[in-house]
Image (cartoon, rainbow, N blue to C red; front, side, top):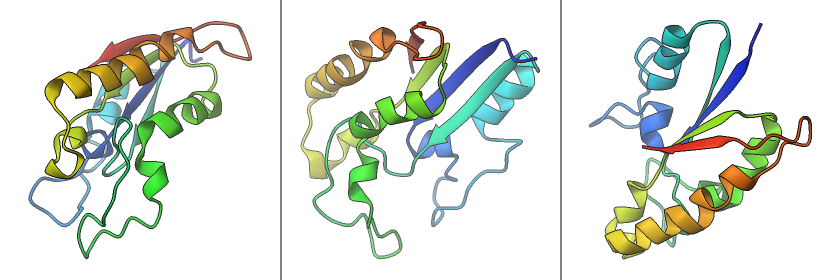
Length: 144
């Protein structure tokens, strides 16, 4: 019986992209959300929500490359997806947020200060105040 639900919300690192490849994915035995599930055991449910190229709040202006077409560019903006995601997995006890690396791409022209402000405004101030429609609880937040 599941007593605690953990949502791992992030970018290609959460998705399990193998560095230096054309979007190959690590196996479930290697990806950290699945390893966390194994460590925590059956009383926990670890939900893997990683999206290649996910941003905190920035919008893509161009395609990443010819092999990876972003026809769904809007779905790469995590700030537009986080509340839908929390609703889809309701109730969530803990969100492990692993986002921000993508924001440092030259294309977005973000400073470290701006990335911190995006984290604060769109996640740190929002997630812990998002009440479950099922039990009225709010998730805790860990930013990695």
